Amino acid sequence: MARAGGITNPVNVWESREFIPLNVRRLFEFLLQFEATIKSKMATLNEKLDILERRLEVLEVQVSSVTTNPSLFT
Image 1 (cartoon, rainbow, N blue to C red):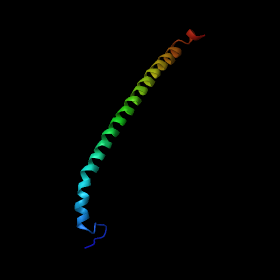
Image 2: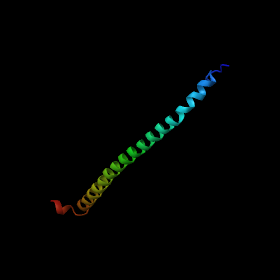
Image 3: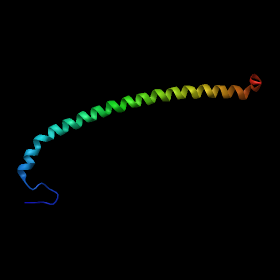
């Protein structure tokens, strides 16, 4: 009994079932590792973004002080 796109031998279906838990476990371990990697990279990016935001705030204060008191820099 062959079906289009299906497995033709029902014994092969039963034998391949024992590999399913192994594949699920490998997939689960991959996802855990992927999540840890992504969290680490996101934390690093967040730190860099915080630094850039602080620098921008300093620059905004400097520009504001120059525009309100240009005589300080002449």
